Length: 123
Image (cartoon, rainbow, N blue to C red; front, side, top):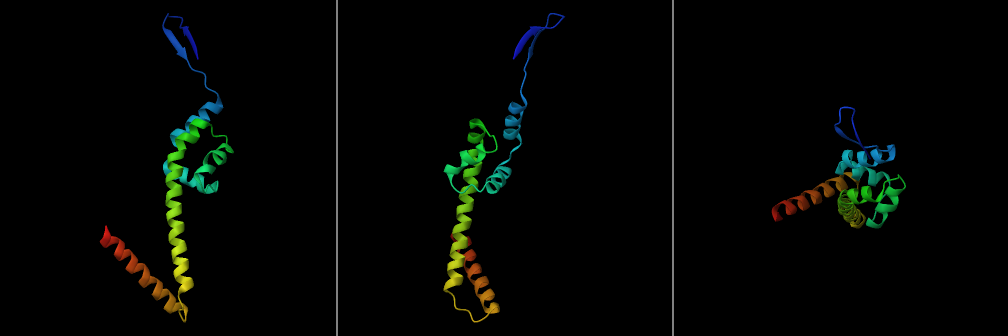
């Protein structure tokens, strides 16, 4: 930062910012929660402990990591919920003894409809 007076006597403040500084702050202004979730997915972040080390590999500083942490934690919560649902579906499929693909597809559609109906009526 430099302070000086212009030739007409007006006090002037000049801020000099490096490319690194502008890159870090552009990350924080342009990265939406959805983009942060996409980034976490691309970096294969699966736990909260992995957030800082994985983002640091891209050169994100501490301030940027803390700025992104809530969005990535939200992504991780949604991911964990989706993975639990996938595991539950896999358990249903593994436990079912359907004679053919058509019966299996109809059975799964019925299960999904019943579960969705139950969730909507509980809300």
